[in-house]
Structures are given as C-alpha cells and as structure tokens.
Length: 548
Image (cartoon, rainbow, N blue to C red):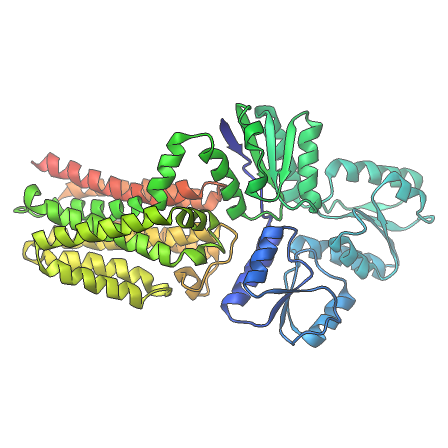
C-alpha cells in the first residue's frame, strides 16, 4: 500500500501560534496556567495539556486561583476579554486572521452598518466576532437563515475563517440578490482553502482518504465530507487505534490529511501505524532508528574520516577503537532515551510507545553495547574504561539539561585527545568541522521536534534562548559558514581540500526540508542527519585516495 500525505494539513498558522504561546508560558513557569475554553478542537492535545497542568476555564466567572490565561485562536468577545483581564494575566492567542475579521466587524458597527457573518452560530470564532458587532450582527449558515434577516440597506458580509468557499459564495450571492447595496469581504482563511484543495488532489490519486482530527472540528469534518463528495471512502479518526487497517489494506493508494487543529505528532503516529502494518522494510528501518544505531554510526563515521589523516594508524590496530566508539555511543543514546521516554509523550509519542513496548530489547541493547564498549576499550587502551565511566557520569550530571549535547562534545574531544601523538594541522582543522557538524545536527533535530507541534521539555537547547523557529533556521544557515571555514583554510596549502565544500549542498538540502515542514516524516527527517557524516567520510576518502 502506497501512502500519500497531503502537502498542507494539520496545524494552521493561528493554531500553531496559540499552542506555541502555551508552550512558552509553560517553560516560563507561568502557573497556574489556563486556556479560555478548549485551546483547539483536538482531544489528544487537550489531554496532553491537562497532563501538563493546563486547565480549561469554561466561564469568565469560574472561581479559580489568579494566574495566566491564554485566549485560543478563535478569539473571544471584547467584554469577555475585559472581564478576564481583571482576574488574570491574559495572553492573547487569537489568530491574526480572526483579529482582522473582528476589526472589520468593529469598524462596520462604528459606521452604523449591519454585519452578516456567514458561518456556524455555535462556533467560538463566530461568537467572538458577534461580540464586536454589539447587537448589529447576524449569523447566516443556510438559506433558511436568510429568510429570517431583517430588511438590509447598508451592511457588510463577512465569513467565519474556516467556512467553505463554495457555501460562502452561494449564500453571499443570495443575500445580495435580495438586498442590493451590501459589501462583501471574503475573510475565509487561505489555510482552509489550501487544505480542501489538497484533499481534492489526493482524491484524484487515492482510493481511500484518512482524515485525522477532532470529530467536533468543523474544518476536519468538512475535509472528510469533501472526500466523500469526490466518491472516495473517507475515514475520520481521532486516534491511531481507530484506523480500519484491514479495510485500508485492500487499497493500492491511501491518502492522509488532517484538520487545522491536528498536531503533526499525531499525523506521524498515523502514518507510522499505516506503514508498520504494510511494509517489512519500514519496520526494519524503524527498529534501526528507534534503537539509535544511526546515532552510533554517525559519530563513528566522523572519527573514521579523521583517522584517514593519521599516517601511522593501522586499521587492525584501530578496530578496537572503532568498536569502542560505536558501542559506547549506542549504549549512551539508548540509555538516555529509555530514561527520558516519559518526556517523549509530549512531542514524540511514537518513540515513547516503541521504547515502552520493546523495553526488553532496549535493555538488551544497553547491556550488550556496554559490555562490548568495556572490552573493546580495554583492548585498545585500558584508560578508555575510565573514560567510559567518566562520560556516563557527565551524562547523568547533564540529565534533562539543555547542555546535554556537551556529553557528545566531551566524548568526541576525549577521542581526539587519545589521538594526540598523531595530531597534525589537517586533523585539527577537520576536527573543528566535525564538532561543528555534531552541534548543527543536534540543533537540526531539535527543530524537527519543534515542528511536531507538541510541548517540548525545558531540556531543549532551542528553548533556552529567546529565538523563534525562523531565527534558529537562520542560525543553522550561518553555521554552514563555520562548517566549511576549516576546508577553506586548508585549501591555501592544498587545493584538494576545496572538494570538501561539496558538504554544503547536503546541509543545504536538510535545511530546505526543514523549512518545508513535511508532515508525517519524523523518522526519515531524523535519520537524515547521518548523511552529512557519510558524505564527510566519502569526501575525505576520495581526497586520501587521490593523493595516494
């Protein structure tokens, strides 16, 4: 079964902004923390918020301790906002596009115009917009509602931002035909239109469509309805357990999309469940990835690339060292993942479930890799045993700290110190690039996790500095200069080092993928951090063989 994922699905800009405001407030310990009404129409996210101590205020007059209250993306009527500000510190998470509609309604009221809102009268966004009309607004959701309108002369037609474009055009045209002279402003959010267009595109390629999202979310229900209108089987699910796997397996192609309140981590879970049930290759790849073999292999590849520039280092003598590096890293990463598995629940539940389900296998990997690391380290240099114990102590010391990356730096630095008798200019310069690559890939992975739309723990380095996602991406771009600087310096002595600048396109591709925010691909995106290390080894090997 081929799985095709919508290019645009899941969190819209407004919902992501509101969720990020809650994340920021959580990490700044702004407690007690409330949301005024459910933050988004997604039960899993609401459960997650509740587990993090975020409570829902159902009414302005709820008797609760004074704290911080986040306004959801739908917005609220101005009177309710004023009442909340008297009781709590308010963080306004109203979507900017909704704020635009509110501003239009407010201006129309000030000009003594009537306001017609085409949308669902029970929707929180519509209630908020009506509040800015101050008694001069009417809601239309069907032709029957048009019959109930009073005579209109000078009026403005607006739309709920998640309204269907076709329905809006039909109802607006009918109102204008009955009451000429009105002004129409299409305030439907582009994100809604794009997601609906994506469903129609998927329907042309797939036999069945899976729509992920809350069953009470208007825009999510609409996506499923569009698929059915296109003559396709559509399955609206809130949880991975609801997937009708046996039914879906009968289809050659299945499309996956999600409503504007569906987080990417849930899309990741659904895609993983579909792939795991139909592909042996994917199951093998997932095991390789979850058990951190790519992490262990990555640091080994960097060391192997550097070892090419040690003239008197023989492969047979170096094998115990390479084994020590690989199995030490395999032990460290699996041990840390197991200890941190509960934190994965808030942004990477796919990994948490896999580790918890196969804890016996994880324990086995941890034990075996530790034993092999000890033996191979002792064979190469008995001091490595002490080094292993030291790095374990450092990992424990930096546990759940933003500086946990220092463990990798210290481990790699220790390996370089071990090679001190063999140091030369090339080895030193390329080591700078390798260390920069370690940090670059670490930040890259943290940004991948940020794109999961979950709630990251305070141990993330990207949360310790007041930079947004786009600024961190720019920082990664500028980091590429530091990556290639040692190659440029070495090229003054030997032009063959200029070939190492070919590292740039690969890092650039990773950065491009990050900016595209591909959905449901977290395992692939994470594992791609090994490619720069493979390429680094191959380029160094090419230069080495060319000289030989």
